[in-house]
Image (cartoon, rainbow, N blue to C red; front, side, top):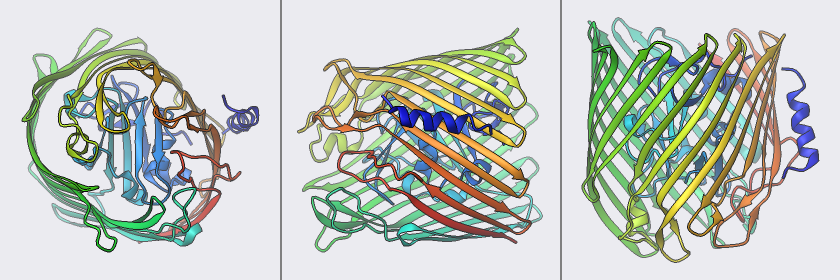
Length: 591
């Protein structure tokens, strides 16, 4: 359990009295997961929202820092800047959560884990975290949920912004955003460059491990007669140094996509056509190194949304995906392709004070054949300010390329399947205060784990949990508290699943001295967890506290940030370092 000192620190933060945080604000507008605009209160799914305003007000520096401030998510980290980050949502595996960037899946088919560490937070408009099975609308690989990362775009102005940031370990970031509008045409350009000397990735490392990365996102829109055409190009590429069994190596990375979409709105419906080409690449860059892992993906999606079809809002869609996987790792090579065809339908309708949502998705995988996924959700208004929701969902994940054919791979693996359930109470105390309480469980069959020599299907895993979220405001002070309890077990071997703390607290306090001067504190506390079921190592519990001061003016925003101000030592993976006390200073200018 958490040490008494850490609990006292956390409680003190929360009782200091304390803007309302969008992550928990029941009035916050969503664009997902229902594929229509709604609010957190009205949504039949468990959703958190982090907006660009939240990112600015709390001084988040990386996407993994943002996600780690969700009590439902635990982040695993192989060291510092640019190193692999793993997402464990609601106790599920790191490859059970689908990450989207501008609607395009970021997870590569070779490794399954999305490279969130290469996304610049300055480019973000919002992140929407949808928890639990999301297979009807988002397909396979959504046993844990979906993280929808939406980058900035502004269709109604010619504004721009310049960024500069510097901090510990000679970390420097520069970038700009600019919007160009002319009649029905709009172009938005986002660019950020990051370079740092980094810190030692492993406990035994003899040198710091540097990192550099460039992000660019270009959006073109043309809007006429209810037709919206969009071309989106996104790319993240750079180099990461890392420690490999005592040797200091480095690798090049690249995530890129081009997305073309057409949206046509009618009086009673809308039609959408989307074409996507994406690439995920990692190449070893050391002398004589030949290892690599590449994914290339072509996709077409067609959707038709009827606003009122026999009294129900109904979405019909199909998706075709052609994916090719290339990898050479530790002398093991593979070159494989698979084709997935998916058909899905979802309807949402009211009956008195109840809102029902039912959907299904048929997934035909070229290697594994057909699979039927789906969901059923119901929401009932107890009063105008309180709602109870319940849902059940069925999901499936096909083994990724490395599971099947990589080093220690097993080509005889079966897909993972899950049945998840949840029940949640949402209560708006007033316009600035509310709470959410959720109970959930997830039963996963054929869970894929390594036995230390080969990947295998575990017969069954069971995850049970409780989530609590509360937010409030008092005068110039706003605060929120999130707590989660998770019991995630491998039932077959009767052991806990690794890297899943049983309890996690997240606290946030924001003090608006005036409109231009803002001070915030945030705190994360986790209990200890097992590093792996195949060793006896433990990851210790910890409490980390961050502080931020923001000064805003008409043209300039100035931010001073301190992370881990008490220099707490902790690890997110055995033998890998986490950053100690650090600082950063940033300035941005609007033009």
